[in-house]
Image 1 (cartoon, rainbow, N blue to C red):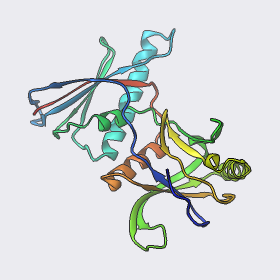
Image 2 (image 1 turned 45 degrees about the horizontal axis):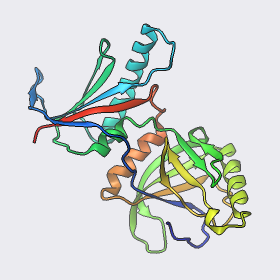
Image 3 (image 1 turned 90 degrees about the horizontal axis):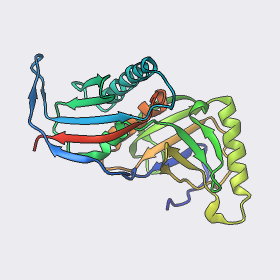
Image 4 (image 1 turned 180 degrees about the horizontal axis):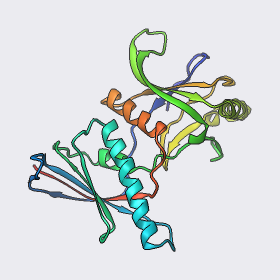
Length: 243
């Protein structure tokens, strides 16, 4: 549980590690050498969850748009030589990497739809990704220690500011202090649960990152906040790496 902090101008939120969900099949794969001489040693296969009743052409279009979003996410994670291919017949998307990565969480983050919600203890959604006007990565002091910390700074829209003020005011009126928080969700994962100690009437929100690689994770979150959600949900069906 996050500790309460003194009131300040910025709303400082601490990111918790995202828990893995579901099972995937992991196999050992041989390295692949392609015509461009890149050697791919890691591969992940995703299966889309299409809406019911859409046509074959609509499915293909969704796959193409999803491919574009995955390319942007790979770039944000510094996976510059990632190769993304769509199989229209099998209805799968494959991501191949030149790095040897045995990290299921990374592959799961790649396929996360990326829908952001600010939720109270009753599950009421107060803000969403549409209330975020701008997001920036910074590595600078955010508290009284004066130490630089990788973080994402969000600028809310005017409507988002009003929503945040209303939300923080509402949670402060709860009789149970353990329910005086606004949790932040990315899809179904709770990524932060900051407690509120004053009405937050501000357009500026700072999200600090608590992970083993805060800079990379902060940059990934920046990509989530600045990109549209994936056009179609994806399930990580299989990943292979050369061990």
